Length: 269
Image 1 (cartoon, rainbow, N blue to C red):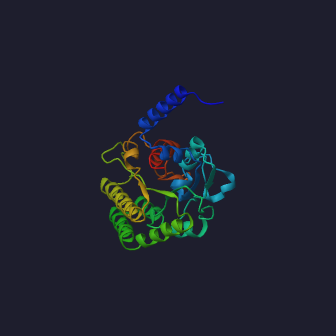
Image 2 (cartoon, one colour):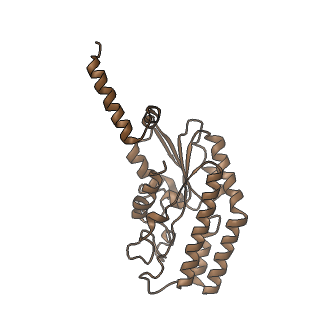
């Protein structure tokens, strides 16, 4: 049955209106409608440590059903979804054990990595258990590592991803600042220590953003989303030190994953 000229004209007008509203060309609109093959890599900030509801099959990797990759996949129904992020992962762990699902057909990759390489856990342990001077010294050691060693490690990961998934859009996500300065905390670290830790997070994020840009990857800054939800804010999306479950300490809560990481990633995906 032939389509009437009037119906064809109306359909063209409707399509034009949709494309105008979305800012998409016909080719872009078709691309957006295409099926997505998504792979989520990285460390505990991507696996969802601190958010609870862990997949028992993931073991010590502690992949949470409330982690931003799972939430994004649930909302967007990619044709395939591989979740290999793992608690404690460093750059070498990503390249050695997480890249299996990547391939020429991979369309989208998310990644958080670098914090463990820089000694995130040891920095916080040192600061919680030792003097302010020891804390600041350990923070400065981490910053020196970020300047001297981490860029090469990141290059190795980013190049390995591109080699296996040459057409993928890769989104590198950063880390939040931990503390609201001048906030509601009345005990714990000093303001100098909190300020130094925040500045170190910014320093790490700067390195991640620079290396991502140099590889043609998108960088997703979570600091704006977490502003007002840091430790000492009174509405924190981050666990403070938790002596009953030390692994959760300084990781996003479920609200931090859904309110902080998810929309930040979705804006770049």
